[in-house]
Image 1 (cartoon, one colour):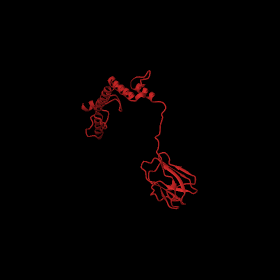
Image 2 (image 1 turned 180 degrees about the vertical axis):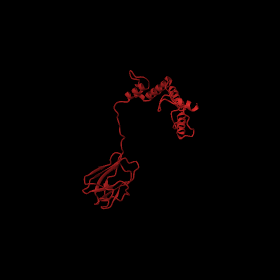
Image 3 (image 1 turned 90 degrees about the vertical axis):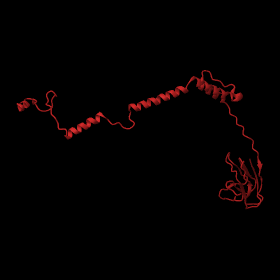
Image 4 (image 1 turned 30 degrees about the vertical axis):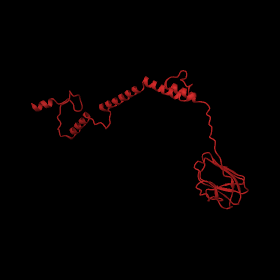
Length: 228
């Protein structure tokens, strides 16, 4: 009866069907397919997250940081602090002297932006620049010995600029950077020519403060020069 009972319980047809129409089968525990299925089941049950993943603990940390930022902002942006800022700006305005007495918040303006707008409005206008007067030192003269360089101007740490007019019939050459005072020459390295009747003046802010040497081919060549 045992074998007959087993045959009677076989499904009507082979293949896939519902669980009710299937026969239970016990697989061996050491079967490779069973081991693979068990590994998949364990992996799904306890997934491994990458470092820094969005976990409950990380979310709690983020919430704490955001709460701290909110508290800091709320503590700084207060009406009392705004009043302190307005008072400071009013002090700045008063410190401008006579020109600052008229500084006030413009119509429709208030708070920090209002004061800044008022200060800006008061400061706009014509800016007058008065340059300081320069004291000129005369260095006019002549070439002492033709063909030999000589010092035109000694080193001067306060020199702002200088000028040279060649009033002779021949060319003059000067050297104003790295000069020893006796190294200017006709066409020499670092030397510059001022032709007969020519004029040279240093550009603004471009004057050398070292020794300036001058060279002329002929004795008694005249020149006009000054520094400031």
